Length: 113
Ligand code: 5GP
Image (cartoon, rainbow, N blue to C red; front, top):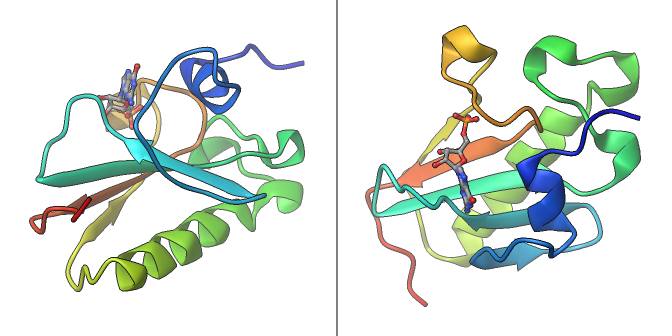
């Protein structure tokens, strides 16, 4: 089994996080060092969907980035956010620090609590 990362521990509630969305497939929480008024991280929850990085995608996990993007889009619509950026950092050279695939969601619009 792959090494458990920080985001496994957030997913499994071993480390607290400000969770803003969860369903059977995806968890979204606030980035602890936000780079925009709204800065969220979307991860896939299921072990079968686990992939460390975009660079590690296989046929079996190729749908995961689309799943995260779709949930981010639905989240934005549900919260009236009409402009945002979606980013994947890929590899250490791409600024990736946590090797549990995650989608950064950044917006200049603040999330209404
Ligand atoms: P990466 O650079 O790997 O794409 O992004 C990892 C992100 O996780 C960073 O933006 C960083 O601020 C965030 N982060 C690191 N540690 C924690 C933590 O303990 N809790 C939360 N919520 N975010 C974290």
